[in-house]
Image (cartoon, rainbow, N blue to C red):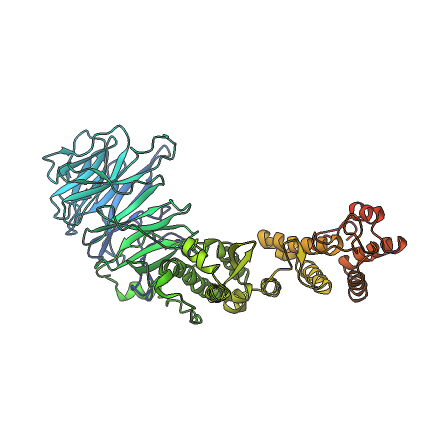
Length: 599
């Protein structure tokens, strides 16, 4: 489902992302259907038809939900239900000839609208799910799970617990069901934590499959029944997990730091498709079942979600022509990657989705090149890029500290992935590499955004460490002027709050260091209590830099501020004293890019 264009609608595409076609649903009134919900379409098992809910307004302002079936090419609409009560939760039978649904109880109807059967009576039942052989239905009733024959006989209660149980789904062989339960959330929160349970179809063998303090949900059985893919927030954001049905072999996939959801297995169980918000809105991604081979299938500013695999897609030429096709994006290949081989293979697997997100962002920016939308996509990407780098583990960190060759190799490793490895006082961390982002993405951005990135790229190695300045005073002055000119020339850049504040923050830090010094790089020659010797006068290099700044950039706010400081220092013989402190405290500091009185 996608919210592209003027409404939410289903789309189909090839498994490689090509041949995107919109399926135009037609309402019973003859209008193109635009659903307010994004998950209210259910494909038949063979992909030839869709069931959907149509919301009809009743007198008195209430909504009535009815179920319709339509061919995938938009023809042959059939109304299945029409009771004044709402009909929800349609579920196709495995052979595609019938649908079950909920209306306070469970009903079954033929796909042509004939032969309604009431399966339960007085159960307050919901969420029916067919067994693989089509003979039974699982459903939820009053917070427990039941199974019933499709003709209404043989009701069996599988769970009996005061906490909520629901969302039961059969294993492919029909021997088990998985379901969600809140029985392990002892905190009794409003938004309660769910776990995934597995139970035999006769009610025996109940066990907690996920058994974690996080919220686990959105599960799907693999076609062979040996694994489940599910969604969990156990890393702080939603990720895709895969686990064997005995609880072993848990793996995590997707984009660290982004919302990943809606997993679905390919028909042969070798791949998983899912939706991710890695680049600011939801897109569809596919990967191998082990997490390798991650690639983007859709690239659109609208949200694309709820993917399903179809064995065939019935499209008429008229439908394809009217919908139009959208070729898959083909971003430029990345440079060869530095690799550590099998020694740190888990880290490489976790970083692979992050690198794939660069390709996806590049394709999106190319489409909106030179417009604010490209900048917006970049900002969404930039704000979470380096933050999604996984922790590399103790073994890696110990190796990193072992010798300079290890550090250099690691620097190259992260650099090839668009990041810079930094270290101080025995600590290591990673930030984004602005040069890398400019090379890969800069050509598609507006001029102010490109300039911002260029400046950050020039300064990526910082200016101080351990309280000491490690660039020259003139280089520091150049950075001050560069940021002032950027802020003054691009007031519209303030729309990107985080980057605008970041630019102002760099300007303020540089100016403060320039006029106040640093703990281990003072402005004045040492004298008691700063040191046993020295004259206590302004350092010659600092004074010369101040004078050059005033001479070269006299029209800037920064130069005027420094000129006033030089005047104060000149009157005191360029000695440290209270006059300088009073000037720095009483004089308004420059605020480039902000409106000033009289301007």
